[in-house]
Length: 400
Image (cartoon, rainbow, N blue to C red; front, top):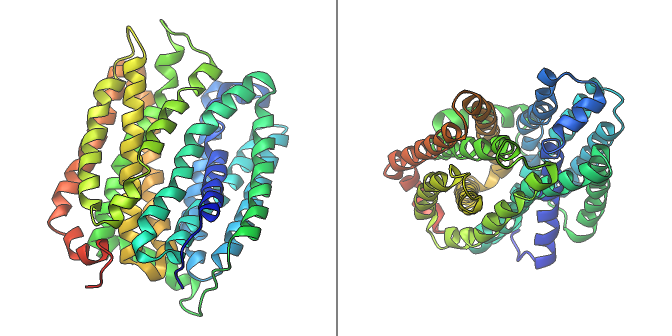
């Protein structure tokens, strides 16, 4: 039964998201240092980044649907503890193979983020669902961007392994906090696991709202990945020549933008999810005009980062609000399937930005990021008078 979610409960759930997702992205600022210590050649460093994403994709398909069958609070606690195990393996890894295994395990169970979003959607009253999802989802962006600052600083001072020791401990602490602060979310007997997996495939084929929002997420996070997977390249090059710690501090600009989008959930509750998506995708495309400017000052780049992360967070919250409202009885599987688009888009952005930079430089990467944003805007425009309007009753919190 839906009841009011307290501020402390929101805080704990946001912490779950922040800590879990950090285990996937913490390797990026310390990639070269970790690879050298693990004895990996430069051409194999990509496996350290890919391992977490591969595990994450597997978890989206195999683990997230369990939230529609089992007590989500227990799943959150169990997944956090297993994420801690993966981080611990990474911290103690004697070679690159073991490190890849540890990162993959951490990524596999880091899908606790999606179970958490489904939990907050299930226990929230209809009129507060978007606001609560927005508050909890802010933890994801804080984790993705904040861990860059943390890992950069710890990597330069105490070593990259300490980063994963800290994350393992945080996962364990947050698991305890979850047990103490959240109520059980018991599931009624219903679908079998195999049937839930099948429903995810059917959803992608037959549900126009889901497909349109999934495609928007794909291009949204391709644009996001283009920035954050490639940003270190121009900043570490001349004329700036910034180090790991300094580059990590740019995550603070992203945090400011993400926090600036905290009202997106409230606007979605008021029935404005469509308008939020359109304006935010337009803002996302425009932000690349500033991000492309890395000389003679970095202030325009910083302003562009703030705008980009604000736009990404607003669209992401709106997407999840619409989908969990339209499918309240299977929120976990819907969110899991939706986040598969997120993961694929992030991977596309990471791969293509390094290629574009190596070939034509940062202006080419920026153009690529803007094109991804415009593609998302086109999908939004095409779907506006089709798929999403059929769910307008859900968007306003009313029944059809």
